[in-house]
Amino acid sequence: MNTDQRRWKQFLLSLVSFTCFFVIRAAAQQPDNAIYITFDAPDAGAGFDQGTSSEAINNAGIIAGNYAPVSGTASSSLNGFVRSSDGTIAEFEGLDSVFTLETLPTSINSSGVVVGYFYQDTQIPTAGGYPLVHCFMRDADGIVSTFDAPGAGTGSFPPNQGTYCSGINHAGVISGYYLDSNGISHGFIRSPAGNITSFDPTGSTGTYTTAINGSRTITGYYSDASGQQHGFVRAANGGMIVFDAPGAVGRGTQAWSINQNGSIAGYFWDASNRARGFVRSPSGTVTPFAGPQSGTGNSDGTFALSINAAGAVAGYFYDANSRAHAYKRAANGTMTIFEAPTAGGPPFKGTFATCINDYGEIAGYFLGLDTVIHGFLRMP
Image (cartoon, rainbow, N blue to C red; front, side, top):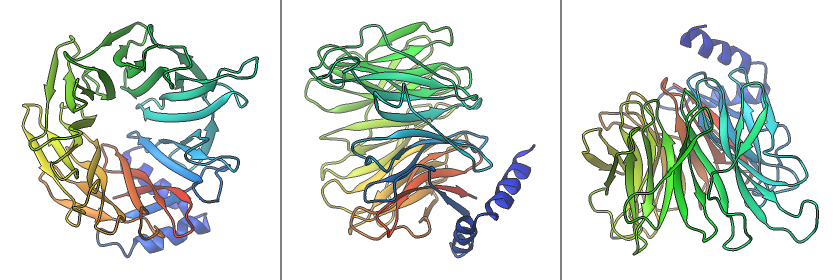
């Protein structure tokens, strides 16, 4: 099935749902005429701080994310989900339903393999335990396996020791990082055969990988001794380049996504403690940008989270009223602002775009007028 056929099939399937039909009608009023589909995991709670959040999308339109169930909240208990292109949603947890505290998918590849990490309660089998973090892989058939990086901490303090998966490419190569017994984070790359190589940029006091492309090039950021963050690019041969966005001070520069050409999207903090998005070209040129109504207050600003093969970036920005607006920024700098239907008003509500695929389909989440978090898919 080609791309146009897949999009048309998904549109037709959405008509069987009254909710999706309502969303499509509302989306027709958007200036860009995009189609919006909202969805919730079957067991997602419908109370305050509960709901469904999309975190990754592949070129088949399959979405991975997390949801807060009826028994938990977005800040205390999360499970994973995978939404197929026909709208079917499968829920899962990292280890088991008793001792997994949170399951957080972070990336999905072209084969539908999802990676992420989960918090395990170590009270197994006795009481008085503490949480450890482990990477997981969920294959297209729903089978979940786990692994830990050598050197990952297993103690109770500093907290949250363990292994975090951040990205997977089409060949099954995984990027991630781990916290050792001292609470210091280190990057790693894992081959499909399971071989793990750790790394750190020179001068790093904490390394965080965020994405990997098909050439095994990894991006992310690290902290130096002063606490400032810097972006990095690690080539398949281990060569490392570090960089800063122009005007980055304070918290510094965070790289969040890399496409097949090596272009990187992320954000940095300026002298006003305001976030601004950036795109870094493969040649090293860094272009800052901001949402057209982006707020200028402390911790306001523009966040760039995902970049596709065409160089289009997806993310969100906060306006002066602390309302979030999603955007798509084309490679030529043209920015389209959009809102999910029924997204709530300020403060700290609105629409959050988290990922974009090579066909320009964007997924994310929004906080509705009902104060519940809902997932969305925007189809151009």
